[in-house]
Amino acid sequence: MGEKVETPSTSSSSLEEKGKHDHIEVSFVPFVKSDAEKRLVRKLNMRLLPLAGMIIFLQFVDKAALSVAAVLGILEDADISLSQYSWLGALFYLGYFAYQLPNNYFLQKFPISKYLGSLLICWGAVTIGTAFGKNFAQLAVLRVLLGVFEAGTYPALFMIFNRLYRRSEQSACFGFLYLCNGLGNCVGSAAAVGIASIGDKHGILQWQWGYIIWGIITTITGFVCVIFLIDSPQSWFLQLTEEEKVIFEERIRDNAVVRKQSVKVYQYWEALKEPRLWLLFVASCAHNLQNGGLISYGTILVKGIGFDSMDSILLQVPTGFSTIIYIALVIYFHRKTNQMAYIAAICYAVAAVGCLLLAVLPNTAVRLLGLYLAWAQSGSYVMTVFLIGSTVSGYSKKIFYNCANMVAYTIGNFAGPLMLVERTKPTYMPTMWGYFAANVICIICFLTIRLILSRINKKRLPDRSDEPTDVYLNLTDKEDKNYIYNL
Image (tube, rainbow, N blue to C red; front, side, top):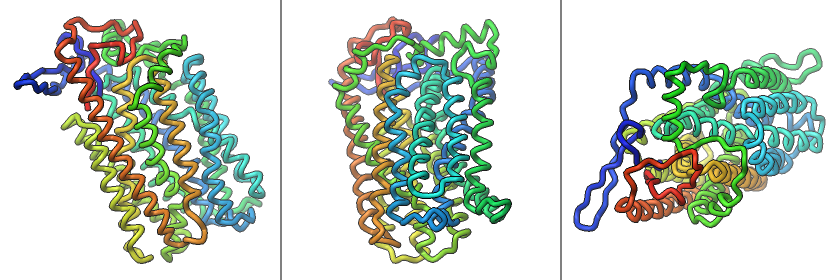
């Protein structure tokens, strides 16, 4: 997490320099909020986080509905083979990929609440439409469209959090979003069993009910988002007092994020020249190979062990709980140690062990242990997002980093389901070895990023200024020599 070196009254943290021979050590000293700021943060949390969490919850449920439908009859009713099913899982991310650059532009040009709400309304309509797809071609088009309309969700919420929360608070905020992913898995899977119990009624098949119900809820949430989502300190729903406006000005200085509608192209080029961007890109691609594969094939893998359809869905609930536990642990240890790269590497090591178990264990219920361990990588992705949010300065540059991460996210998730080849079922052993290797690559990338940022810190600390940088200058972290990275 990068921190501006500022006076104690205005900084969210302070950095102490300890010189021992030629070694410079940076230690983290937590900032103590005033009572007024604590009240402001509670107010912000209560008015922003429930809606943001609901959006992420619905995104996971709508995206993962295909996995539930796969064991409830969509393959047979739409005459789809497992190979075509893999493509349906992948095509969602083709739409996701195609929309990243337009999304990058729209995020700077339109109010985020109105823009994101419009996307929600559109993807809710597509989710409902998916229930009535009759064949592979129709479902393929709908999956691409779903990917397009869901593509702006995370970048939009990341930019809101980057702007409204101090950098010392952001790991918990990003963690909250991914906890809602795990909650989507738990509640969505449990709800899927209840929805499936409706059966075939009123001309609607068992697997179609989930798409219709969740699509309606998503559309309604979109309209709520347009009206109530807080995307800036000026949002009407936040209703700041004069005292709170002053506090928010200070928080914006700490964040080094001021929304700018003008696009700074040079900041894009600066990002492209940084090895850190490409290491994050490779890590995100490798991470999401497993993510895409296990989201699309989670129920099929469990059913392949020998469980029936309903049990296969219910056994996704522990997957959601394990995700919540991993993310909660990551948030806790990050706030205790202020370490990002090391925590991410540990999570990837646990996930690698899970993939190794999936590759070598016999096809019995014991493989569930490997499946649940493999989801430890969800904690690592929180650190990926936090690394971008807290070590990249310059509004256009930050958006570009988020966009690059989303592109890598889509590439990995697109390729991940295609790695599960039908002839290797039910264990898909070669794919599990591939996911194991991907986790090892992620470990290497994160440790290398830490080394790069540590070296920059050592060069900057002796020459840093005592005067805080004016955040309204919209300087990048490279231009601002006061910018010190937390690791």
